[in-house]
Length: 397
Image (cartoon, rainbow, N blue to C red; front, side):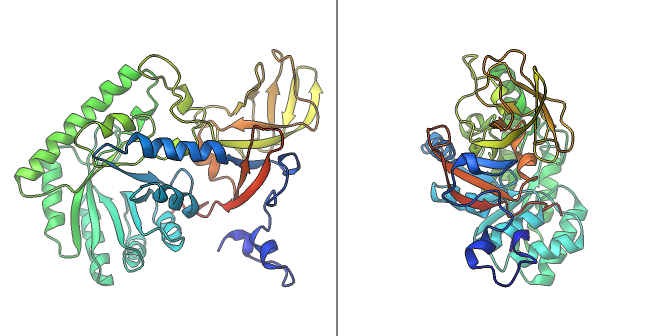
């Protein structure tokens, strides 16, 4: 149950309860949506889903779409309807929301340390068809095995190897083999393969440099898979990849699952990547926006909007005004964002509503309770078609 359901008057009908505290209602014109609001362009979103499905349709890989991007069982189920095997996420609390929302197959593509967290994860194994996690230490292995034994379930486990991200993971090769053997020896753990994700490579702008980095990832992963196979340990899952490199892992002959997430929304940061021909990374379209209102025009070359730090993340750069040449977003504070409009021949006026492309979609989504789903967003009369809760907002543990 979403936060919006709590503390509501008893005389509110079901529809009002479902949409309480939402910035819009179904059927509303976009111009009447309250701001700031998180808006999905349904047409672009659906094209992005289809493009990913088509891109890997003839590849020996499956999509395990990353739910940390959208935090929504509704979106995961749409991805599964087009062939995704299930979801991955980063936190046990995210996995709980996905399973409650009907997602049957969830991998926590991250290490889980702590008896309490692992007990909750083990409990999900009785509620879903498949639950997995990543392990890169003996402590993590022992705690996962104990939690699974206490719950009388079997947890699926991947050994995470560090393939260049410099984050979690054991080194490729023999250290991975040693840990995989220990996992396979536990009756309440099932060794399923490897987690080999190179996150920072997703954002290398030059295609050649990006590919060179992923080629190293593929080589280290292949070496480890072959070593495990020689020692009787099959890797049913070799997972990794992201929106910036998914085509490379899909063609590797090593990876079996792709964990792309941002492709559904395409933020401003990913749009800075370049394709092999040097052109813009336009495989996917911008489908996620922050709708904001001009609340002040203090100077001729400046406008202030009602979207600041509490509305859009700036860790990967500022939000970008959509299709507004000469207008730039800068100097956000908690509740305000400043637009410089020196170069615009059509500057926004007081009360105007405009769209911002988030710099980084994942943390921006985590700032909102609702998706306002709009059909015909860039047409003459865009309407709100649906409202989806950001069900796993704040699921940090």
